[in-house]
Image (cartoon, rainbow, N blue to C red; front, side, top):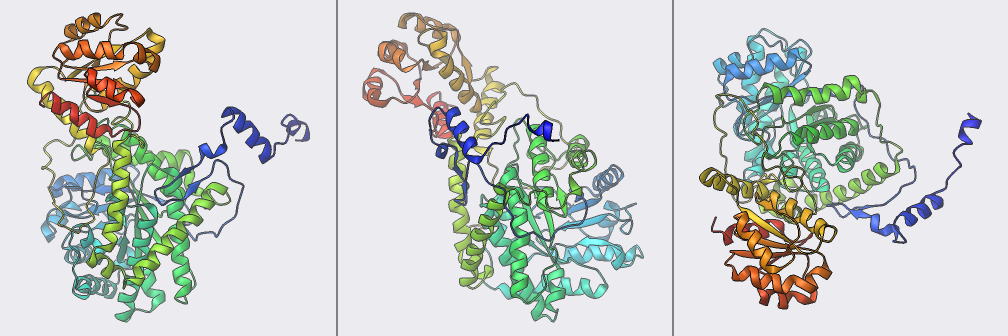
Length: 609
């Protein structure tokens, strides 16, 4: 061991910093630091560190498959196939639920539920997580009645009923009368407890916060505030605190940001332990359920969603989630078919059965970066939680719209970063494929239900939608004319001079559905006009380096604009030349850091599409 280790000389942090600065050609390490949506600084390097250990599960997380087909017969086929092929839990999605996304069981009468669960053994070890809709209390009791009609003992069936009085915040407006809103959920929970069903019965579900564009700290604060209100509600109904806390499950979204997601799930358990301690309870492992995030799903190049879902499962699982549900990769396109469902299921099975990721307790523990992020998230979330409590609790914060307002600010910053491609979306705003094939979805599936949230709702968004709408416009033009809108890239200077900006503009245009046409350097402005006319493009973008622009941009712009094009852009920031080049005919400037969505919409406006 000594001989082998001598081959690798010991390196200190100072050595690492010197090597990093050399690689940065003298730039400061500060250039590698970044900041999260919660304002948490991410350092270039961290020392090993120890933080509070979160009480978590013992063994692998459960692989959850969605049962969300509106037709009960098809839903039954989904359930039997998933349980027979590796899933050990089902997420029973009802229409209008937070995780329904336009699908889910639309009826819950005895005949419908019997057909949907025909042949499913509720006492054979599988777990069931209910994602309830607008009539959640009645849906929960209907599911319980289904189990009773099967002659089974409730205590032998593992069901997380997911009763959530705060789900209305995702639909808006949140009612001012919290007592009336909570009463049916509480009554159903107490009835289920009387019937003999075990925990958990209620849910502190913060998925709506993430879906609406909230930050990790806002999502955690919502979950904590919801849980403490449920705890008070149950205690007022006579449930001892130690028993009441066991009746509550947490639900969080997991996205492809490994760093933030893993730390968020760790932080939830630590923060909840702090609340338990403040309530005079000995902390116990909270029941935490994860679902891959809706807002990161794309309808374009949806196969990338397979990787996003796998990363979300990886991060939530290693962060300590008890169960993980991965949205099938085609859900943003339509109701997923069996292949999409199998990929969502198998991504988790590979992580668990081939990579054995579920057999290490808190694998991020002691890693400086994760410990620092977990600690910072706990602090941010705790401060927001205290603010909510200071306003009279979550019901008051939601009824007044104060919390939704905070989330809206975060969502605006997030969508701005997406539009400016500061946060590129692979397959959508980066590396778009205009010739991508359409994916298959479930044949004969009902149309997606359109649910319009009211004012004051935590309205869900998908980050890719602004770019996808641009692509839809391109598709409409293609279907009508047989070709996509074209932009001719007039290259100034030899290939090494224009290569970088040609590549940048090509990808930028394709993200908006435009076909970029280029055929190398044009020696003169007249040649550029001739090539442009041959391309059939009605829009043009000049591409070169700053020296080429200084020498040729004005002449090229005048000639091209005089030819009658509908729009002329220049790739790059204009600097001191803006007035000069605009006077010559340049309409727009395309550069990194600009609002790409707005600029691409402007191109469609110029061609009248």
